[in-house]
Length: 183
Image 1 (cartoon, rainbow, N blue to C red):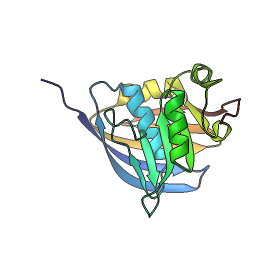
Image 2 (image 1 turned 180 degrees about the vertical axis):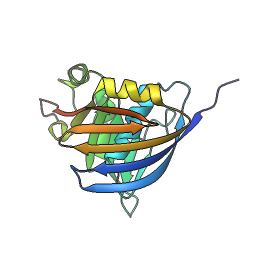
Image 3 (image 1 turned 45 degrees about the vertical axis):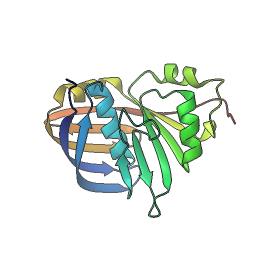
Image 4 (image 1 turned 90 degrees about the vertical axis):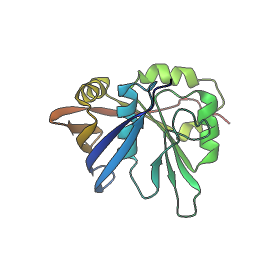
């Protein structure tokens, strides 16, 4: 018998000084058995750091035609395709063509992620930011993860500050770009 997803709840207090977004909201996140805690933490951070009207999680592991996080406008059109981890170039190309804006958040080595994309066709590649979350911050958050979570997220001047269930964590949120513009 296949294991089902584990539900995690996050009571989020967001202060994104860099974007001028200050919100409080509740997230219910289904964690698929194959999803690692660092990936899920990065997915939650991507949701928070892209928080705006119409933001939602994608369909998950079994839904190949949706990103990890997306933003739809009031008409239902896809305005942002937000990937997590290290998506392949073809997926990023397709996502960039499907939405007005594409972005990637990763907890992995950004140079390795970028190296996998170099020389490949990615629509509007030079316009797609890759945000690398400090791996120590992600690992610390993964260690503090529970089923019910109190999460405070602050971003200011490229730094992330988290309080997750009493664990105070901080680290850089470094922006990278794909060097070579493609199709």
